[in-house]
Image 1 (cartoon, helix red, strand yellow):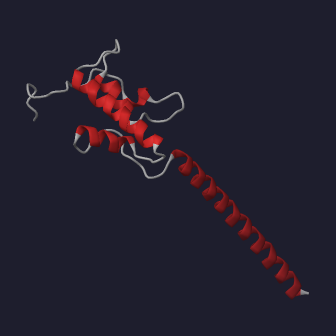
Image 2 (cartoon, rainbow, N blue to C red):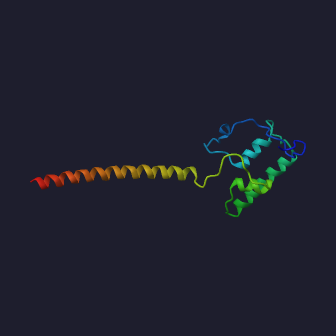
Image 3 (cartoon, helix red, strand yellow):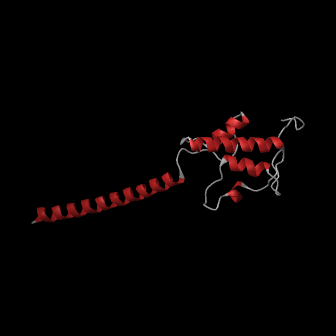
Length: 134
């Protein structure tokens, strides 16, 4: 249990569900976005100066990483700034939604291909039986 008097950054200011925070593009919000939504009040002010500073540092790291042409997940950036491993929120996946969609398409094509192959094999077997009877 955390001593609330020792907490430097207050708890959530927002009560939105993660499901309600889905972007217009149907993508889950990044950990940095979730941090901002958690520590910003409805009027746009921060719950504490430290929360604001943390967010600005996250944004600066993210901009620097993009400028260098590198990639670093938002979760890793949050962990770097907060100096602890994030154990909450949506878990990172190694696959993107697009990769999952492509894999599902490939699986459907594979199943269709197997179905057609079996159908052709049955036709060939039937024709071979007709030839053997003659």
